[in-house]
Length: 193
Image (cartoon, rainbow, N blue to C red; front, side, top):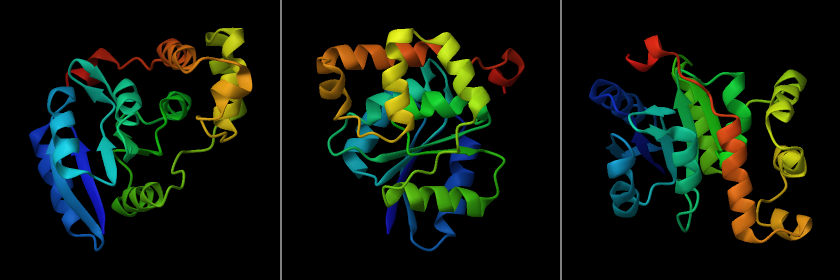
């Protein structure tokens, strides 16, 4: 059984996700949260295997929230689930430690597969193309390119600070800075959904 907590600010979507997840054998919704304010209590109370996390939440950025969730011990897998899950979100998702990225319009079997893969410790992230990589490298500090390269290649993030001679706090600050530089703007028309 894969225990899933989902985070979305829309009650109708949360209800729909719960119904869809309950219909799939082996996937068990253990709760939902509407955003940053209540997610921490829910994680502690339910101890999910996977957090299905919307990217756009009121007052919160799903990528930054993912990064904080991945610091919980033991960390649950995180699958970003968003209407903005396009190529621009792939690299920030990798930097934040997301285990998967699924577009909200994806067919249910694709979502189920991503949840199962993330729960098994496998990546459910899309491949990163040359254009995405070029765009990202033009936006981040050149000193951070080794970090970006190591994360994209799948280097264990616990090994990166030592390999690059960084203190853990400096590594964390550089990751935050990179995520900020690559933040994905949500169009105003979409944001008001």
